[in-house]
Image (cartoon, rainbow, N blue to C red; front, side, top):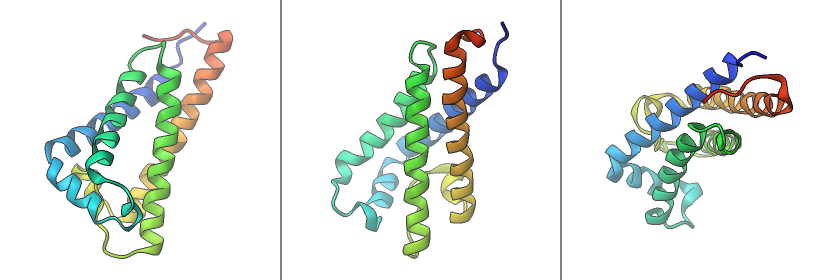
Length: 145
């Protein structure tokens, strides 16, 4: 049996991404709320409720990824959240103009094409993590803690 170093790298990168994004959004919460309120795709939603859900989900993913018993859930959540964020950004880019990104930090400063590509890469990474985790659970590799 061998430890799957690729899965370890994927989990560490996903944890880093979600922690980074969550911390930057939390550090400038008023700006995060303001950017969310400018999104034409979110006009029907209460930003006061949506913002904490986004932040909570990002931090919850980090928590789930941190423990072997909840890692699969964290990987699935990572995949679906990254897929959702990628579709959201793609829709903003292709159908709307001058919409600020509410991601925060260096992520919010990326151009839309670069950000969409970045998200797509992390979406594929999360999908690979799910597959590797499933393969691992069939007894092919040693889980890491």
